[in-house]
Amino acid sequence: MDSALSNEVAQDFSPFLKIYKDGRVERLSGTDVVPTSLDPQTGVECKDAVISAETGVSARLYIPKTKITTNSTKLPLLIYYHGGGFCMGSPFCAYYHNYLTTLVAEANVVAVSVDYRKAPENPLPLGYDDSWAALGWVQSHIEGQGPEEWLNSYADFERVFFAGDSAGANIAHHMAVRLGHEGLVGVNLKGIILVHPYFWGSEPIEGETDVVENRARAEAIWRFAYPTTSGADDLLINPGKDPKLSKLGAERVLVCVAEQDALRQRGWYYSDLLRKSEWGGNVEVVESKEEDHVFHLNNPVGDNAVALLMKIASFLNQDI
Image (cartoon, rainbow, N blue to C red; front, side):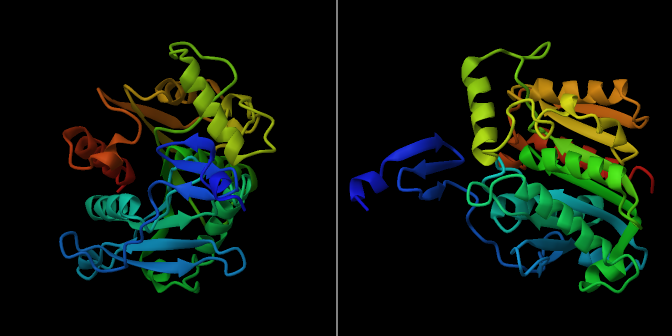
């Protein structure tokens, strides 16, 4: 291979990743791995589990260990899907490990952070398939006979939540729709939390800033992750085109948007779609002023990030 060609960029999705003309993929962040441990500051312990040896899908599990030892009551179960444009990030990098540790401590929940396969090596819809397979693996614990003792002993399957940020929020939504449509015996999905969800469409919606660069970039990432997609109105990226939207299998939805995020209006639009559908649940939108996309991960100790964390924790404990 010509060395000059190997250094020539074919597609640049900075700050996510770069694709070189020789086919090499360079991920620009989220490639680090934080070891499993018991965090002394939060009292949260984590461990990793293989969901499928065949596909390589895995997860990182979290429990608020210091609270569990003093209270035998089972805790709400949070299934989390990380963001990164379907192409980068993992439950094991500091970005997501630190966030889940903090959220589990604040909300007092058990969490499963799913490591689905990523594009472009594993193009969509494989990430959705992996995410659904992870739910089947979680479901295998409802009788207390699954492979992971933490889920057998501590997870309350009557209080299950899905959550995610950006592309992960998109996945969380579709897992809730699929659950509502197909069912998942023994799993009672109380709510979903969509943080800065990555939804899109071929036409600008009311209130959406029609910036050519933003539109081109949002659609380019989608087509890159899903080469066989029908486009920006594919029902997987545009919930307004999904005839199964009203089948969403959760009672409550929390949509989190950021004022300066190019995807902000898509979150509001999604909430309107749900309200106008035959879904019948309760949807709430919380907007963080003067903030951009996934700001809470980039600056987790900022005032707005802390406020958002508290709001999500409250949502998870609303029925307790």
